[in-house]
Length: 410
Ligand code: CTP
Image (cartoon, rainbow, N blue to C red):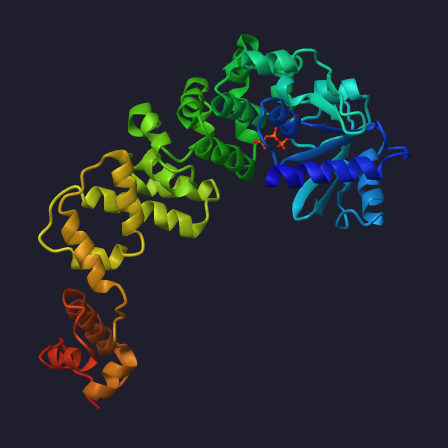
């Protein structure tokens, strides 16, 4: 379905540019072509136009011809983003390499198609599809062969490729894992030599690449390469024990669904310091709600492996995360002690809502506002958690026998 939608978009653009200056100057490059040659579908539509300011001009041309949304133009990058049928599409002119130091904004200059090919990261990402003629152009002459042989190779001098953008080290690892490719020797050496430049990369960008590694196929291989190259230091800078034995990176990881929470849970569940894990997840800009879920599930998994007398308090606290935690345990083959009791207790709380609140307690017990209400509320909640069948009045009756340290009677 998605495949058809994407192909239709490409067809519409190639029809629209017929007899315009963009005909035979517009190419797809990167993920789309790589995946096409691998027989996969890619939703990544990166167009490159071999004309000065061609990307921005083509986007405006298509917008004026009512083919896409109004372009968002990033002047300093010479790129334009549009949407067609809710699919995001990027247009950029062919560019040549402009070396820059790590603190300056990128300099963008028009270049030939071949210059554009050699400024890209890997040969497999440097294959072009002319959307007018449908012809593939492999300008490094290595892209197609590397795709066939399963090789990740820098397009030109690997050290310069990684100096230009150190994030490419993580991208190379990601592709190696995802496609189960080998990293070519000189490319790999340059990754190791330049790995410390990852310290200059914003956490937001590291997060993006790492997340893809974590949820893609081939996670274990990617993680192994992260350790081998020492890139792991820049992904988990808040972990003081970056020891492979303390992070779960084995094949069991791949038996879990390819989604962030489950994968992070497995990775960190045996790490000795959850505070550090939390700090690192914050550093990697993981969403607050997801961090809470990851930590809750790690706590649950540790707890449910041993037998407990009662589960009420525990189940009440973690009820929103328990089912997922147990699913993860099943997939990982972790034994849950007394699972039936946990499920039974979970059933007790489902569809039941704690019936009291501070105001009701004040009214029933004729109390005035004050610290004591907090104490009564806590007690009432405790009683209810032990017996969630109790209704409002039964709870109040039990509360009447409760005598806190001081009274605030009206
Ligand atoms: N590119 C690059 N260096 C980078 C990022 C991107 O040379 N640091 C080039 C590559 O040619 C890449 C293309 O820009 O293929 C598009 O980049 P992007 O969409 O980020 O990556 P994909 O290769 O499509 O990777 P993914 O499938 O993970 O999205």
